[in-house]
Every structure is written in C-alpha cells, then in structure tokens.
Image (cartoon, rainbow, N blue to C red; front, side, top):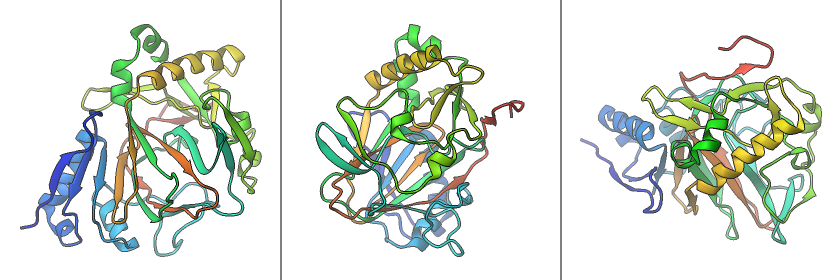
Length: 307
C-alpha cells in the first residue's frame, strides 16, 4: 500500500504542508488521492518534493484535485495545446516585461493576485512545475486569505465586507491604481498587446470577502487588473480599495517558495493569494502551470445577475 509523508510547510505560517512520497504509483492509490485532496482543502498549499519532473506526472497530480480546465485566454502560451489542455507556460524572454524594485531589475514579476480574477468562473487550484529555475530570484510567494481576514483590523475589515470588485485583463502596471511596491519603476512593457486590447474590456466581478463551505471567511481582493468597484470606478473607490489592501499586506504572513529540482506546488486559488517575486532578466526562467476546474464559482460578469 502506497503512503506519503506530510510535514508542516514552515514554522512562521499557519497554512501549507510539505509532502514527500508522491510518485505515479502512489497516485494510483485511492487512499493517497483522498489524503491529498483533503490536505489541500485543509492547508491551502502543498509543496511536493522529489517528484518526477514530466508533463504527464504534472497532469496526473493535477487531476487528483479535479479535471483540467482550458485556460480562458487563447493567446497565453501552452506547453502542448493538443495533448495538455490547460497547461500554460510562464517564461522569460526578449518580449518579457521588466520592472525595477529598489533599483533591481526583475523579469516575470507579478504582484499579489488570484488567477482568473478577470473571468467569471474561477479555477479551483493549480500545480506549478519549474522547468528552468532561476539562480537569482524566481521565488513564488503565497499568503492565506483566511489568515489575512482573521488578522485584519476589524474596522478596516468591515469596510471590505460586502464589496464587489471589478477586474479585467488590462494588467499594465502603469494603470494599476494601488498595491505596487515602494521604489517601483516600470522599465519595459510586455511586447504583446493583450492589456491594451482589454483597456475597456468586459469586467468580471468578485466579492472581496467570501465564505467557504466549511464556514471560514476568506479575504480575496487583489490590485492586479482591478478596475474599481461594481457601480463605482471613482477615485474614492480606489482610495478605499487601497486602504483595505494596505491593511491586508500589513498583516499577511507569507511563505516564499525557493524552487528546487523535483518540486511541484499546488495551491487553492479560491483561498490563497500568490505573487511572482521576479528574477534576473539575464537568466532564463520557465514555469508550467495547470488549470484545475472546481465547483466553486463565485463571480459574475459586470451588468449581469449574480451567479
């Protein structure tokens, strides 16, 4: 009978688990699959160590948590569009965006966000596999929306309750109204025109706070692609969002994943925010990410009835 070993992810965070023993044979065991599914529901992030580094293994691990879902943006690079639906490629290259934080240039940097905020149907989870690991930077950060909600100043947390937030695919940093780091500078835009094409594109609406079926409240606001509040895109709306976000950042307890060969990382996208901390533009970095469909769908298109 197959077995896996589960350990605490890190002493300074209340979420996450580190798992060894995840093999293709182990994933054929229904008890192992059930344990992993329950672990993700309970802990939010799973870091699997010493896993076979193949696309087939990444897909097999992903399907433990649900069926793969095709990425909603056709132009996003795929690992294999025909054979690996929903497996996208995030890589540095000559067309990549470059930012500078505290004087250090970074590529593949992305601020705190949850994936598919610009879409009405949320993906449940994802599995990351680092195909090319950067030596200088390249960490992936995770923060638990349950912990953030619980630790926020109650007066500011109350301001987030009941807010419905707008997001779309205009992800340009010079259009981001709050949440950028201090000493931030945009050096170079992405070469693609996806953001420009979506400047006035359709917005999805997501609540800033939602309640899990198990009863916990989750903070789920992010600055990336945020276009204001449902029915309110005023400066005052962005000031409110900025105040709430600043409090969330103040209290969040972050796990920074340092990538090693053999890692695969799973996170619950309905609960956990993540950030790509960026890497040296002179180094190649490539991540493959699966998109896992789930039953939770708590967004809707602007102007339509609540799902």
